[in-house]
Amino acid sequence: MASGFFVLLDDIAAIMDDVAVMSKIAAKKTAGILGDDLAVNAEKASGFASSRELPVLWAISKGSLLNKIIILPIAFLLSAFLPVAIIVILVLGGLFLAYEGAEKIYEFVFPHSHEESAGITAENLTEEEILEAEKGKVKSAIVTDFILSVEIVIIALGTVIDEPLIQQIIVTSIIALIATIGVYGIVALIVRMDEAGYKLIKFSKKEKSLSKFIGNILVKALPIVIKSLTVIGTIALILVAGGIFVHYIPFFHHLSPKINIPVIIKEFVVGIVLGFAVLAIVNLIKKIFKKKEIA
Image (cartoon, rainbow, N blue to C red; front, side, top):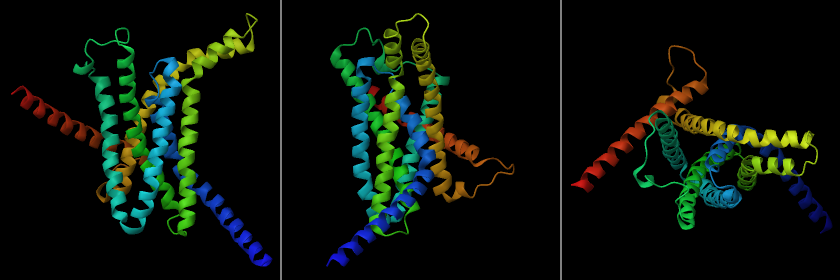
């Protein structure tokens, strides 16, 4: 009886050792997409009032965790019974990410005011309107997170697809948890840089001190970091989308230009071309519906 118990413990220890090794491999495989996830979500979580940054980020984090809870069991079921559906979902998600990236570039090159926000500024918004605007931004961030989460989960699952089901579940769940806690933990640090800087300056008693110097750097660096993350986040959206198209659509996967170019350039070009194609279709549909409404 006792020997059987120790054999069971030994088996559990062996499984956990295998899980640890496979988790490291899966983490390396998903490192790139986690970096993109960080850039995209940091850009999405910025632009709120200082007092609302952490509550908003917490709302997005809870949405992200719920995304993982929804995605994980579906991914395991589809992987076992309908693997082609995973590719279809990934491609559709890639089209959405490419569209978002192309739309941001279009807005930057051809800025224009939106009808729904015309005449509305931060000064004349009521508290209810501000909260409503926040809900819209949070919803958009959670939708984007959902698509990135699908990509993270599928890549992690792909590294252990030949392993027993229990190990697939444990390893993929660990990576999904890291993707939520790690990414949003770093995002929280980024968006609170200025607050930490102000506190260092406030508690500094000397005119010239290390804490005051660091505080000033943090305060001045935040706008630069946010602007940089906006650019990086847009590029990340297109790269993630392009990566999906190149890896999962045979036409783009086997497309070899005459000039030997790096894969990352190929992914960016494919992502941006399809992104603007989707943007053109969406804008055309909007114009058609607008004309029908006027008529």
